Length: 135
Ligand code: CMP
Image 1 (cartoon, helix red, strand yellow):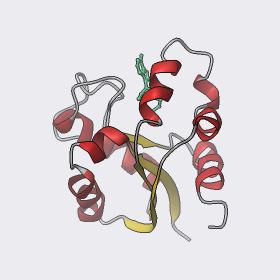
Image 2 (image 1 turned 30 degrees about the vertical axis):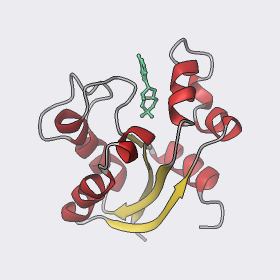
Image 3 (image 1 turned 180 degrees about the vertical axis):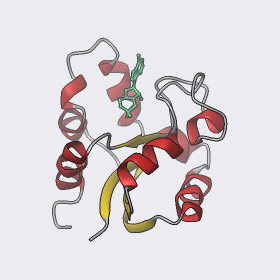
Image 4 (image 1 turned 45 degrees about the vertical axis):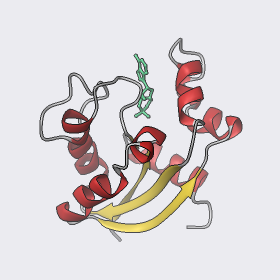
C-alpha cells in the first residue's frame, strides 16, 4: 500500500480562507486524501502531538495558537508522500521558505505557518495513530 502522512492545516489557514488552496495543491500533485476532519485541538492533544517540543520556549505561544480555532486534520497517501509533502510545504519559517512552496507563497511567520506535516516514517506512524486511531 502507498505510504501515508498526517497533515494539519492550521487555524491561521482556516481563518484566512486558505483550506481549499492548500488542499488543491496536494490534489494537483496527485496525492490522495484518505481522511479529512475539522477538529479543534485541546490542551491534552496539543501536548501529545508536540511531545518533542513541550519544553521549548516557543511552545506556550504555539499551543495557544494551535488550540485557537478549528484546524483540518488530513491523511494523505501517495508514493513517498512524507517527503513529497515536506517539499511542497517548505521550510518552517514562512519568511525563509522557498517561493513556490505553500509556506513560501502564503506565510510570513515562523509560528503561523499554515501547515504541520509529519517529518519521518516514525513520526507519521505516531501522529496517524494519535489523530486517526481507527484508520
Ligand atoms: P510544525 O511543523 O507544526 O512543528 C512545530 C511548530 O512549532 C512549527 O511547525 C511552528 O509552527 C512552530 N515553531 C517552530 N520553531 C519555532 C520558533 N523558533 N518560533 C516559533 N514557532 C516555532
